[in-house]
Length: 195
Image (spheres, rainbow, N blue to C red):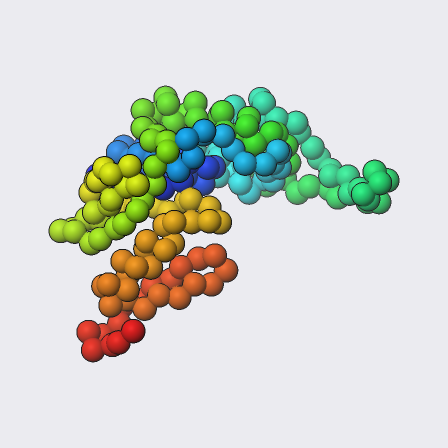
């Protein structure tokens, strides 16, 4: 695999690009938004996702910029504490089991790593169409440009344009497509199948 396109510049797309670039795979991110800022206010990460971030050498910078919690206070709407929930630690005794930070802080840590790995990010564009090329996926972008990739990763969130593009492409390849719980599954059908 020589060239990968990642559609979506949120945490999922950014971490996918970091993981690939660390392995020497040339990748690029396209993000529809022209203002590359995270949605939402804050985020909490428990031990399992932090373990994955440790594998990408991202745990230390995130821990340095986050608040650490051994327990989570469960509160009513009026601010009265109703319970305390201990957090399980699967990382190690020196690491916190749960951290919280602003989504902007998470974005900054991921963006810094992308820049250090020279991963290009194109803002204000996304995929408008895809087709199967000669051993590759040919992609048309909303800005009029085009490219050819060994792999296209859809990480563009709940209002995904990739889902619609990939379903159209798979149907043209006589592939049966079904969606379940936000994921799209595909399986080849016989050439005599109709849809």
